[in-house]
Amino acid sequence: MSPVTVDGENPIPGGNSQEPAIPITCKAGVVSNNGPNYKLTIEDIQVPTPGPNELLIRLNTTGICYSDIHYMLEDLALPRMRDYRVRSPGHEGAGVVVALGANITNWKIGDRAGIKPTWDTCGKCDLCWGDMECHCKEVIPTGLKVPGRFSNPSEGIKALTFGGTYQQYILSPARYTSPIPDAVDDFSAGPIMCSGSTMYRSVGSPSFFQGRAGRTNLLQLKVSALQPGDFAVFTGAGGGVGHMGIQLAKAMGLRVIGIDAGAEKRALCLALGCEAFIDFSSSVSVIDEVFALTNGVGAHGVFVTATSSKAYADAPKMCRVGGKIMCVGMPPTGTAFVGGEPMEMILKGLSVVGT
Image (cartoon, rainbow, N blue to C red; front, side, top):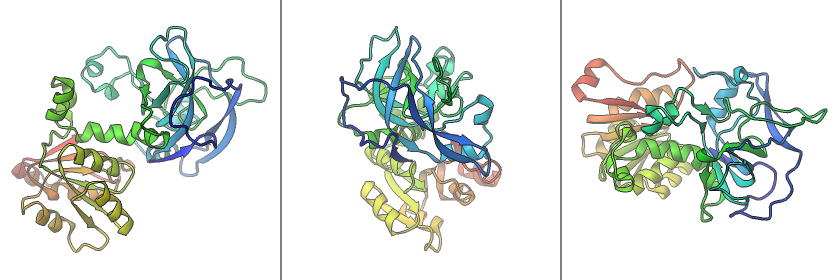
């Protein structure tokens, strides 16, 4: 995920209680002709008005995630943007609160705020209470089917009924908005909302979460459950999601092996915490190299952050007995399959986990 400025201004490091007047209209990236020949243009839309429990956020940056491209291409087995009248994609952004709903007491104008891939959920079901709220039946994915309200549309202004973070102003439920500390700049905070949270969920171990939350919950049963000292392989390690995973895995005490191509990716991965890097473009056998680096027995976990069919096909072969394959990258529907021969999966006791 690559962060970009939304409004052409430099992202501010912290909040500012003296926010400028809220304009009537703002710029937005608007998609048309969804599908293989989609088009994204900059258009004027009306600035929305927050409901009683919502915040209006002026975005300084938005991450460009490849999921946005998939949404516009319509090549994933997901609801289509157009079916929900979504015309402005994007699901990771950082900015400043500029208006508060009538019921808001725990936010103030000028607070820094982040937008995540999940815009809201029911907050009541077992999944929501079990820290698996992204699977809630009533989940609203940001940039895919986010509701928006616009008051008094001006003649000639294209008012979007729905929209994501490819716009200067966006609504967000106060209870589901992430506060951003001043020590984290907007260029970092935007992508952290998506790739950072995705990998935090995927990499985190029960002991890591338990030490911070004081309890074991459904989330801990879903994540990798790798322990400090375990070998973790990341395919697509130098990508937007993979490079976040490297840093989190290193911080959690894992021994990280990165797989990607090129000197630039090698330098990045080693700088971020990989103890070894395998260049698949020049390697005679990536699988053999993984085994050589893991004392001849394979990795405890393989995090497939790449979207290639080969990355998914090779993942079981890189695992040791009892290893786990963490599915993170989302290939176009029908182009890749995870797992291996049933006997291989059975005899090695492998687990495949969706994240």
